[in-house]
Image (cartoon, rainbow, N blue to C red):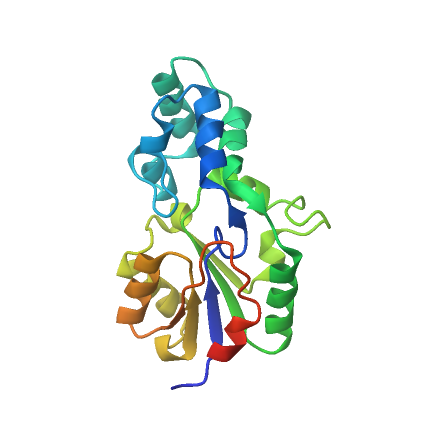
Length: 207
């Protein structure tokens, strides 16, 4: 096994604990009656998937969701609903990211996400200490900006090309089994902790 030089992390479910049921309630509160059908814990579909894959922007999403619920929604209302996914941001995860970077690993974020979630994560409100999520990573790749989503192999290949790294020297950490399977097929070392699990000790068994 090659020595690991790079670690790619998923965001929701790994760095941040998510609450799918709370997200459903948040969108139900907006008036989206079939929120259970519309939302997905791992890979969004419909207008939610279109937003996260960059096919539509946040303004178009607000408009389309407004049509679905039958009233005009503000950007802030849409963001509040999306943030229903946010359960907790464990300090242990952030401290481990800092530690891994200090130990010389290149730390990369790869997330299926959207402008509403990242509007918060990229702000200095992210960790309640004045830091953005970008302050914890050497590089950030977001589905809506790259216009592609996990588990599509092209998303992983994009990172390999942009970062000029080798998959066998890269550990991919994601709570989504399909995402991990896709990365493994491309030769990545992989780790699939259960959603919300404490992975901060186990990761060192992979390094």
